[in-house]
Length: 281
Image (tube, one colour):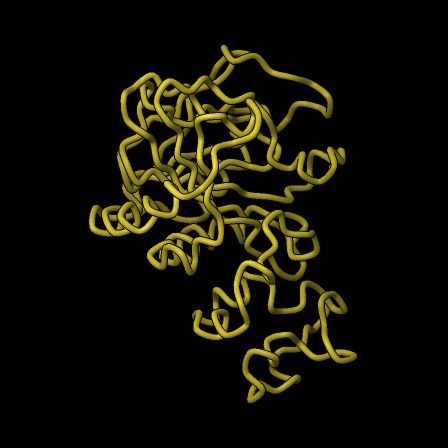
């Protein structure tokens, strides 16, 4: 495979344009989608949690890498990234077949420490027990937000553009990857079938990124969102985030409670079943 570059877009690009490029190339970068103030606040929120998190237990997880989940309560500023309107619009246009909903797959900070080797290139959708999804089924969109500048030296994410078209069981070489160098506040988006991995950190500082992934509403989430947050905490989130967490039915009869009610009524009994019901079309 010939190494290709990752298409780049400004923050005012249209979701249609970004989604088309994401489907074509398997990855895109949207530059400076979050401002410096948001990045500063999120970095301050995440660093104490990251310091208290264990390092990875193997080379894939990173023996000098710390991952922290459940960011919506631990790092409240992350909500602006999880529910960013442009990101959600792109995801909505990209996942297929999406006849009903999509949901939040995971949130995590990824802190790659100094002197860390490159992570093995992989596909995020391998989490589904390596199931060989058809190439025209797009089940997942992943996002890595740079809350610091991402550089070649500090472990910027490596992505292999075009690798989403490779058949199941094929592997790629590190030399096939492009480096997602980008200024803080930018985000690299890639499909669940696109090969990628954390880059080597040869600098003397820890590289912090925020990983937010989305998946079709009828698939199990990688991070268990129902146990990551209490019901009282979920009730405090905006409705859009409640739905992203999985508190709406994922299809006509998927995820209901009490014989047919939407879980959204559990969060707010004032919501009527009729208002939340799914109309197949």
